[in-house]
Image (cartoon, rainbow, N blue to C red; front, side):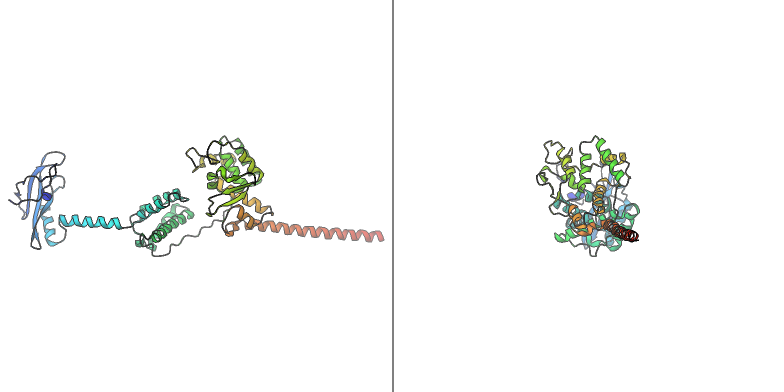
Length: 404
């Protein structure tokens, strides 16, 4: 009787070897079986084994169970033939290969693994929640198991085309920019090799300047006054009177308000530099009428800092009769800027400082409003000159007539 190793036959519940079991022959050379009980049912079944030589060494290993693996003598014989011909690995070799693969996988920096490290390193980074959604929806399903070095320009072209079918071009740009940030992060932290080519971001025309006329502004202020929400209306007024971003309003703290000197300090604006903007009379009135309820935030949410108040402010927008595509916080920031430039009393440099933009390019979208103001001023100058000239001619005519 051939003695089986514990690995071949199995272990009992205490971890010891099972008693040797009688081998029963089949019609196939090198194929035999032992009788056992089926897993889960307890019914009798056959466990098939194969025996063959590899490099002069006798190998005996399990081929499979009769019911659980649908194993038959013929199938076991085919497995034995593949082992002899070297077309398949032995059980031991397969286990060793699997172990090596697992070790290699641990060392692979897949894009999903890079994202986990990126998120762990930058948990409070601005826009992390949005980036998390972008990665989970658009990058992980396609590239999550790949390494950065394995990506090709064709892979990104396909991503760009597929996203463009259902998403705005701005969304496509953000997704590709996120992938580029992950590649830069991996290279800078020396985790792995990055993408081997330059990621081209689509050009997005962001020149849409949302604006409201005087009637729409009056309707908005009326809807704000009638809205019962304790904070939404004041938030919108602050956006209209200061041009502050939604995120800046959400994070505004009482310590950021200097009522004595009339300034609002913005500690974390988009430019990553601390800035301050003037507090006009309307803003002062809004802020002084807000009740302080023990929170350091001017507008505390139910769970701390506000993340989204879209449902409430969109309701105000609807009752004010504003267009559905008017992005209310972002739009009011544009209204603030447009009114100032159109007045002809505020230059683009001053506007840049009020909007806390880092570069003057960001306010160039309002240059056409300044141009229109300059045109009106030039036209007015022409009218004034003509009027003055006409008046002078009239005076000369009157003098001539009097002399006659």
